[in-house]
Length: 617
Image (cartoon, rainbow, N blue to C red; front, side, top):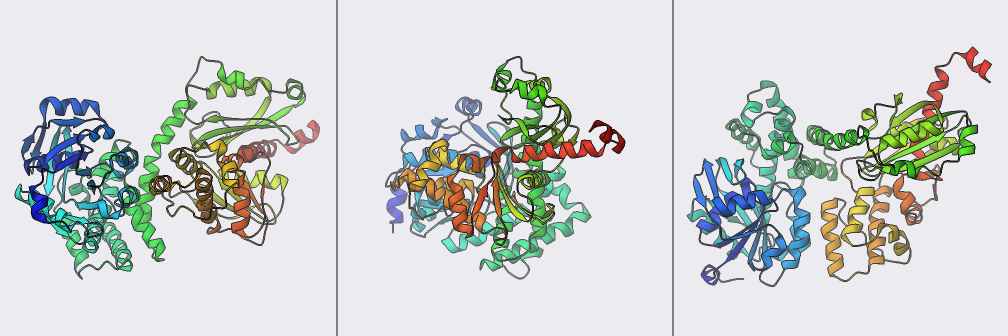
């Protein structure tokens, strides 16, 4: 344990990373409290304003401050040599900064998580260790009136600060005392006590923030709608039940106190609502999403929290849709797409007769498949979604229509509703079932591992979809998950399967969340684990995840999707974990596009009168 007198005598250096409202408010008060403060933010416009004009607090707190140590790169903080790094970033921004921040680690350095949400401190614990990590629960809020001016909406003291393993209680107490002296009242708690305050704050945020974002309402406006009050109260009730299952106890009148507190809210937007309204990512996964996650752990239904979380994610998904639409309407003048299509079999195309086009518009890639009347695949290709510079979608469609007599087309996948040139749309669930059934009729499981989700589809003996399960709450175990984790481990995706096949390593990633998994991978790297073992560990996490899903072991299982196409080693692991042989369909990445082409053909033929079909044949 440190001597508090010695701590207070030291010229403590504190760096604040992230200069949103929370970061700026903290930086101003830490400087006023007598610490030597550095500020860091990637926004160079903001940094230039702060360098020239300082920062200003207005509203509930009125103060102004100037800083000498100003940085735009976390790595540059090495020159400052901080004793404490305070992170006031959004949770979805944290990991990139942590990647650089760990390079500043030394014996004296400590880190403080000043962020919203449940479990956000785990990113710092994974990166720096529990003994170096502090967690601050803030009870103030504000909005930026300008990049360097914060309007402080409220401060409901105190804030709460804790050392996550209680090894630095005196250090935390010294910080709290100094902040309290400058009227930013802060109370030091033990590590188990801070968990209650984290849940308390998150429950309050989760009750109103999603509703405000979805409805574009201020906190006060949301609380003034009579019909919303019952919804808000049920959201809180669900969260309290989950918290209590986690051994976090609230007083009997806690829900009433929450409602009373929320009724006092002012005419301002919560942080999540500001992000959602401005089409930015949100922290919903660490708020309502965490309540849902812990509810599932304890088999507690959290229907309203799940609904709000999914609605926020659906609205956030507009960014992907916008990107996709921009690609679809983009008219490139280059000829790179046409060059990609030089592998057309001209003779076969000429003899093909009527053809059908399927387009699978996935989150990461767009796949195309052309079939003839006999359902042979004549052509397939893949484009990266939203990649304007390499291949223009318009040119692919022009080339396909120039080479083949396309009678009908079907679009499927995430972007199917935003594809104006297809005659019909169909869900990827049905297209996947149609495609695999064309090769393997009868009862079966289909595992489709895509860029952003995992689908488990069960077909009955008539090739119809009997049931399906879709893991789309997060990107865990998907193509984007594997790519991001491989990049973090500096492993080439093309080499990952081969590397894993050489390993006997049986330790998997504990974290399914991409954010946590990245920090866990960093720990593996620092511990000197070889990349072939890391590769197998990553695959093990995915195989075990799928093995826990609803896969019927009594019927054949087929795997499709781009992930299995580029990660063949997964087949062996899935067979091992599912305890029966799994099969990989030929051209697995194009199966859903093929299914869409089959659907286009079937729909077209059904639309033709019977006498016309007989005359044609």
